[in-house]
Length: 468
Image (tube, rainbow, N blue to C red):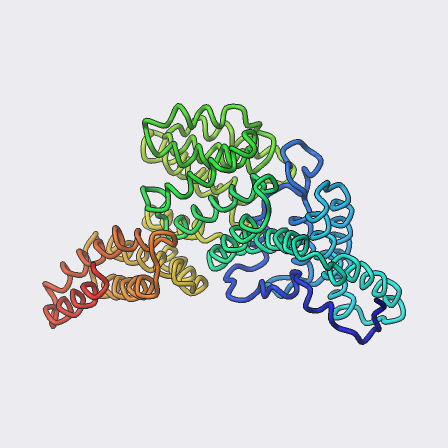
């Protein structure tokens, strides 16, 4: 049916402009871009297995989004949406192709309607896009096919959500699960299961828990194995599974087999291989593979952060400690040049200053991180580490400032657990590490302070209420 210029039914069509992607996102666009997989420049290479539509659509939306730091560029956004439409033409599955076309057309209509003032110049394009949506979305009468289209649209939304940081991981997982339930077994993509595993890992890693055992590890492994059942060559699934297995000495050979045939041709592959080698305590191999990443046209911030981590390890174990520490700082700075709000790099730089006894600089940077990263997971992490620094800077003795930081960290940790924080979002790390260590430090401090017995009793009562 024809649609007048005043008919706004299309504004309910699912697309990036109606998914509330900016809500509760703590990252600015700089961090979002640096956490995107570096595949826009390798679309035609063999490493890119799925359609690039979800990446192109999300990249286009970023150009006109309201994320902190965006300088709106409607022209560039429309170019990326059109590129997504062209990419969709190569998709063999009719409903997947239709889903990409629907989201691209809806996104382009939002730009025309809200960001471009010249109605005469855009009128023809607007009518064309409305016809595309009517043909592919509005006029579809087959419920089964419509459900399948909706499933693929869920994965486009899930991809975008997966790139927006910890607050969006659970919603991303939910979208992928709904898509898997909606399409036939033969249509589920390897990348969907892989991303489910990745989100499970990231939820835990947001509090550092993935560096040790955590209750979600089995679920993460199961998702990667399902991905490899569908596509045994999936490089991301192979490397991410290898990273989990490398934690277990009995699985190191299997981890090595998984990553052996994955090429060192993308920044993503190189970073993941380096993380695996570092987990195996093989810093030399990690640095060798990272050096290949430096030769890429657009290395990501995380590549330089991994350099810094490896030189930090070597500084602890070698005679040339000073040289390794200088290289650690060099690569932390290179990481922060690309992503100035890289949370872990900022914390590590603060610790670097602490180890160098540059306490004023360390204190200033810790306080900056505490202020700029207010989400509960980041906030409790930075407060806990700040408390440890304050004690270290006071000849490893507790003082009032350190106690106050531990108390603040405990308060947020209790809130995380009380609000349902569990194994999947780092709640187990809070229970196993943060709360016991904080209690130990505060107990020592309270025993030698005025009103300490009262404060200690209050602390124990609060912890007992959450079973700690």
